[in-house]
Each structure stands twice: as C-alpha cells, then as structure tokens.
Length: 191
Image 1 (cartoon, one colour):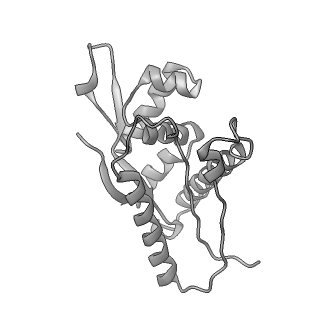
Image 2 (cartoon, one colour; image 1 turned 60 degrees about the vertical axis):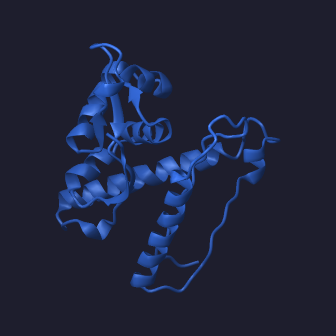
Image 3 (cartoon, one colour; image 1 turned 90 degrees about the vertical axis):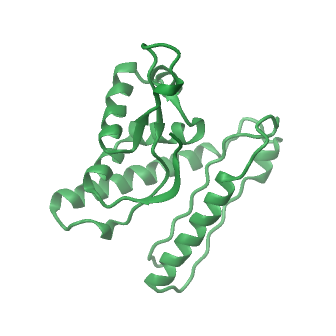
C-alpha cells in the first residue's frame, strides 16, 4: 500500500488530538523521512521505550494517520508501520467551537510550532558548516496585504511546490543528500 500524495485536510478533532502530542509529532516526522519503520527502529531513533512507541502508534492508527505494513515483515514478530498521508493541513476554523475542541486546536498548534522552532534552532549550529546543505540553508519572510481567499491560494501554491520537490525522482546514492526540513507559515499579524 503506497502513501497518499494528496494533502489531507484534517477536520476531525479526534485526528487533531492524536497529532497534539510531541512524541507522536516526532514519530510522524521520522516516518515522513524513512517511509516505513518497525517499532524497534522508531524507538531507537527517538530514544523512547518500545512500549511507549507502540502506544503512540496505536493512537495514530486509530486516527487513520499510520497503517501497518505487514508486507515488509520478515517474520511474525516484526511489525512495520507507515504513514497513511505524507502531508496534512488543518485550520483552527475547520472545527466546531466547543471548549474541548478549542483546547485540542490550541494544543496541536502549539506543539506543531514548538517542533518547527526546535528544528530551526538546531539548524543554527550545523555539524558540518562546509557541507553543501549547510551552505544552501536559508531563511526568508515577507509582509503582504492579502484577503483570506488570497492567503488560502498562497498556502495551496506553497504546498504544491513542497509536494513537487518531495515527490520528484532522486538519486539516493548522492553523498551530499540529506534530510531537509522546510516549513512556511502564513497568518494575520502586525509588525
């Protein structure tokens, strides 16, 4: 079963609640880079106990965010998992206005932003400043005057660019190739 290449719009608060946990957010990030993984591989990569990883995968599976990949198992003890979708999108206005849902939306937004900031901070001190990837790293921002419809269109165009680069054919044998995290945010603000 291959992962969906379309952007999944999350509108179910239960799915958003599953995303609103730092370990589950990291699990999904690892699986975006590595495609399929075993529970043990994920535990080693995150430095988290196997039992904890199993619990978080169960939560993500119940939310239809990950799926078993039994075709990869070499024996019955080995359990492989992969993401259902490689890209998710959600908006705080896409949910009901209950206090519980508002708390879930706030938690998911906060955890997502904390993860993005954590990764950006780590990038400030690359291990090898002379590598091609370190030299190519960038930061950019812009102030614009947009309507809601224009901001939505901009978000769609940015996602298309990210999808095109993510889904292209790559030479996996390149010595200079490495994982790169790209994020963009657009929101109403004042300077």
